[in-house]
Amino acid sequence: MIRVLIVDDSAIVRKILSSELNRCPDIEVIGAAMDPYIARDKIVRLKPDVITLDIEMPRMDGVTFLKKLMKYYPLPTIVVSSLAPEGSETAMEALEAGAVEVMSKPGASYTVGDMSTQLIDRIKAAAEVDMKKVITSKECAATSVDKPSRSRLSMTETTQKIVAIGASTGGTEAIKRILEIYPANGPGALIVQHMPEKFTTTFAARLNQLSGMEVREAVSGDTIRSGLALLAPGNKHMVLRRSGAQYYVKVKDGPLVHHQRPSVDVLFNSVAKYAGRNSVGAILTGMGKDGAKGLLNMKNAGAGTIAQNEKSCIVFGMPKEAIAIGAADYVLHLDSITKKIVSLI
Image (tube, rainbow, N blue to C red; front, side, top):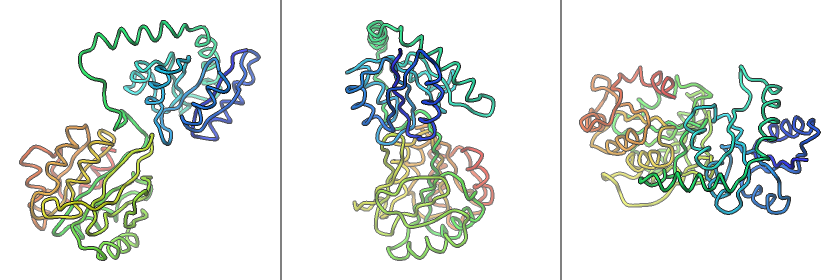
């Protein structure tokens, strides 16, 4: 019997995989874990022969866990994730980290039955893998590459996308117009509008009435999800952080940046660092240059970037600075920005 541990944060997926795999007389599902920390304890206690591993999980993403697993407790691992169609960058990253096989979860053209048949075959093959050879191969590959390994601060790919918006003078109306037509189930949005404390509470409530999304003033620890827009509180900076594959915000004190708190640069720099190519940034009407360098950092990290054009700006300051340093992929009229955000996401 091949003893299998399933690691996936979805209870439905764990149930389906357990049911399908237990149909095979040669396989026994000995347990399941909803995140890598629980998986670590069960691996030590249950000693599985093979594990299946998701990528998007809370507290620690699957690729990071896989790297740790290969270092301390090498096990034949099959990555099963919606982020890992064959040939994708995430699939390649998982293979480089030590996965013996990578396969995608069922989708429109890929049924549970198809997946089950393939997964059973791959589990049987994985059980025969000599992990010493896998580790040796990884070590040889590592010594042949001069550049350091990619930081795991931002995931290569994720199903969770983030939109970051910054504005100042004239921004209250611009943000309102964007959110009025933003999809109700659109990607989570983080918004900085230069505005004093207490004013942002009222502004968030007003946006919540006008938008199909839920809009509220951000509180430290708020998780990013579809259909939610978080507005930075007045006199506080808002930054993006990541725990596993889950994104959340931190609201904090700190020095004024470009004479502003909240600062667009502070938000955009954190989005560049933690979300990278999984994000879109938009800089709107406003005086000064807050957000220009942050938008450039987002662009350099692979994000799609947008600046409002001069014709539709109340004050063509912040967008002008961003355009001047090459930070904007697109320069658009305000009425076209929401559509472009959605298309980029």
